[in-house]
Amino acid sequence: MKLKFAKKLTAVLMAGLMVVLAGCSGGTNDTTAAAGSEAAGSESAGGEAAASDYKIAIMYTDASQSEEPVRAFEDLQAQYGDKIVGAVLPNNEPEAIMSTALSLVSDESVKALLIFQEQAGCAAAVNACKEVRPDVLYATGVVAEDPAVSAAAFDVMLNPNQTDMGNTIIETAAEMGAKTFVHYSFPRHMAMELLADRRDIMKAKCEELGIQFVEETTPDPMGDSGVTGTQQFILEDVPRKVEEYGADTAFFGTNTAMMDVLVRAVVESGAMLPSTCDPSPFQGFISGLGIEIPDDKSNDAPYAVEQIQAAMAERNMTGRTATWPVASSALYFYAIYDYACQYAEGTITEKTDIDAMQEIIDARADEMAGMDVNVYLTEWESDGTTYPQYFAFLMDFLIL
Image 1 (tube, rainbow, N blue to C red):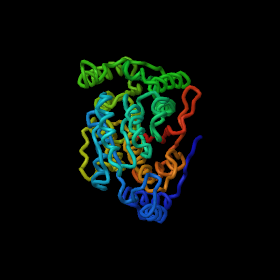
Image 2 (tube, rainbow, N blue to C red):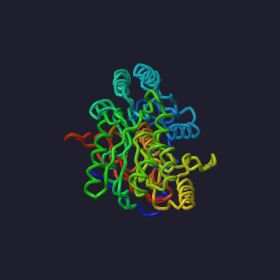
Image 3 (cartoon, one colour):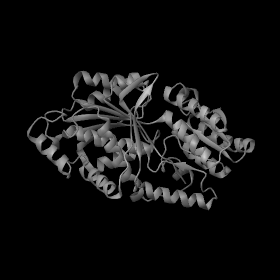
Image 4 (spheres, rainbow, N blue to C red):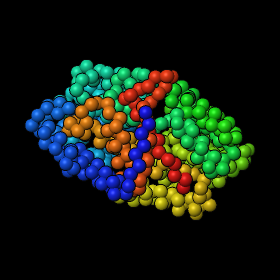
């Protein structure tokens, strides 16, 4: 199943405005307002509480893993106050994940539990929560566990389409004129099915397009040498690879901790970067290029793109890097949140509804990018199995 929404400017602006106004506040568009009004006097899809009384619980990774989910959570909390309850997701601590999740859903007014980004132990925690709160909507963004394990627990999973990105990233590199493609990762990541499959697709696409594929193993940022060791390796290895293969070498890394230094090293070496690991104008580019972003522009993707393009032009790097027009990690965070609100208010009546998610993510992407953005949403397929609750999305790359 593959859906694509093409929208005229007026529809784009209205959709974006409706999402902003509706949010979790009960909404101002007729459909949401009506649903909220009815729910106030009767049982809603999310439970018996009135629409205006519900809460959305969010567990999110800390800034050491990714800053964008933290910024998205803080933004939502600033807008909606105590309607948002949250906790930092314990890193690689299954028992702590479970106890935190159970504590959050013990509040009867909580109608959805959202987890960003899913890791080992999250599916087990959700299954435990479902035993006491089966009415709650359980949703996650970015899935690290086996799809079959996660799909058995969560009602909605939203993830960048990592496997199909294997094709689109290489196609973008080819459009830039890349002759070599270097893939940086480490055994822990390559043990993850999604990331390994994407690597294999990248390799096959490179062969198809006549691009040399080079696989390089880096230190694991969660290993003995830590993030510092991984970053130092990237800073030293990129210029070595450029010296060996030439400036028309495109680079890609699988870990967030690599991105700042990868952008820096690629730009300093005059090489190519067709995408960061989580495509975003904010990931790697801002810090790696030393760009100052005012606080009031911290979530402004069009502003960030303008600054990056200017920085690339100053360094004679125009056309040699690319990204999605909005932050993928922020997009799935907001889209899942909007979905959870509509479920709690009764606008969405089924826990798993890909058509509803397509409308929501399309509107959010347009709003965030300040332009018409096509989002391609599919049901995830793996080893002949389709997971209808696992939504994977793609966007077209923007060459900077």
